[in-house]
Image (cartoon, rainbow, N blue to C red; front, top):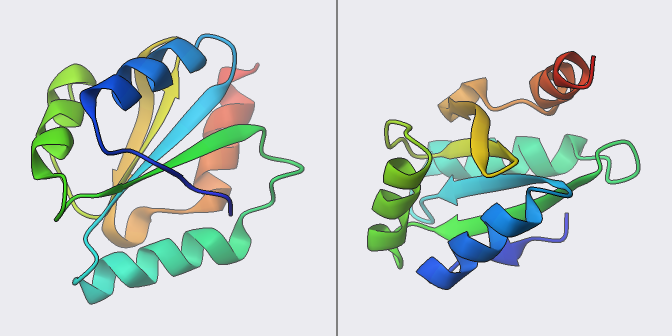
Length: 115
């Protein structure tokens, strides 16, 4: 998986703009949490960039906690860690946390949203 780092509010603005032409995935990850590490590893091991036309973004929430809070506010989601958010047209169309993070579920959401 080719993660793009998030470390500023400007990056969030760029993700919102990009999401108007391409779906974006944000992973909020706690680098010291074993559950977060396991969820990230499960996501990466099943990620298929050819079938998932999604731009993946990564936030180290321990280093950038204010950005994590801003993500929760901007996308109107409750803060969790680990957490994924699927962003389309500037809005969060799906979010999940902890061991419920699943590539198969992301695919299902995309299939449903794409009709």
